[in-house]
Amino acid sequence: MSRRLGKIPSTHPYVVEITLDPADYYRFSCLTEDAPELRVLDVDKSQPDIWTVFVACASAETASRLKSAW
Image 1 (spheres, helix red, strand yellow):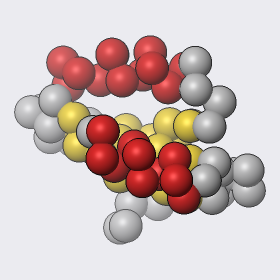
Image 2 (cartoon, one colour):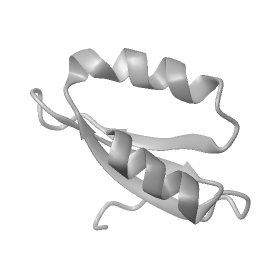
Image 3 (cartoon, one colour):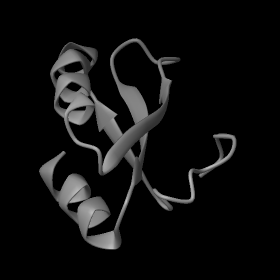
């Protein structure tokens, strides 16, 4: 991971990097708002057609499920 994310919360030590179409980001952010096991750390919007989202997860299982789902 080349992007500097700052301090990773100790409660969410697993970081997942996913790519999304910008049109899907709103739906994704709504889903993560109600999920205490996930925290959006940063969104790289430098490419207009695809955004990279860095998400901290509370467990390895949560991280794995997130990677599989998105």
